[in-house]
Image (cartoon, rainbow, N blue to C red; front, side, top):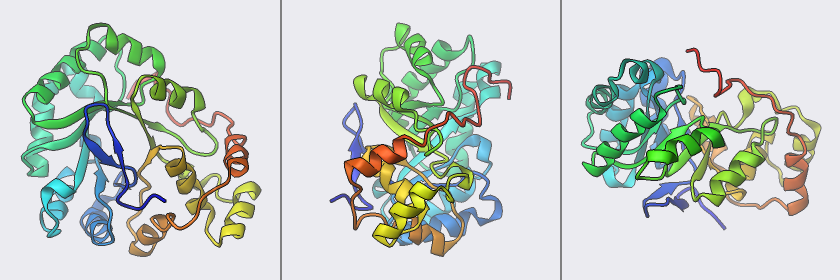
Length: 272
């Protein structure tokens, strides 16, 4: 049985917690949210330059009382810095904002046409310099990953993408598994869109859980790293209360069947 501290071993041997806290749009609640999550056993915190709260994440990590090497911090490179060719400077700004000596995982936030290989070379150098423990991508589809691999020397350790019951991304997950890339879900609860889904409510009733907990358990059982966002301590605790039951293969298949391709950002049309 997995626990909140269970890890996925990345393709470079680094261990990454399978469950963590996302802080997109946490605004002024970032410090208390991260502090609460760490206090309740979370060890993965996911932020990004675009979230404008790296400073707050770093403050919470440093004041948590938990040794730095026990907390896994992810941040990401935003799109405009790729277009400008200032990828290295962007990383240094993120590291400075976090106030940390290194980042555990650094991701390319979105695939920018004509910049994929150039950007990846910058991340490879950061990795070689041991400023990051692992490098990866976010919102990359198989053809983006193929383009990256043409001249890449380091394989991406993680692909973080939108994944929830209405967008299960089975083909992309299978591709990642085949190429030893860990799959990670952003917006795992789909902005709440599926929480009233009868199938999920029925499964939740059986286990005495909430539909949200069923979704997060589905991720864990499918070896999908998952980072639900919340700023409320009660919900942070509730989200992590998924390690005392297991879904059956039939229930996993039921959730698989909910997929309807409900995507909120097309990686092939990145204009932001």
